[in-house]
Amino acid sequence: MLSKRIVLIDGHQLTRLMIRFDIGCRVEEVVYIKKLDEDFFD
Image (cartoon, rainbow, N blue to C red; front, side, top):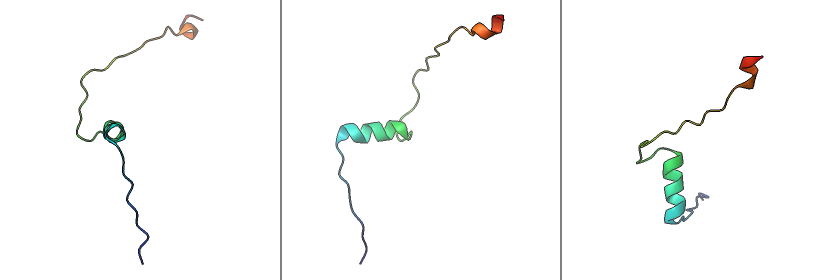
């Protein structure tokens, strides 16, 4: 006997998984957040 199971998920969780694993989506915008490197000035 096989011990397989199916887990049902809702649309919100499906969307999060699709974005997390890059399935059916593309990058629209990239935001770079920069911080001053104080060690640079030592």
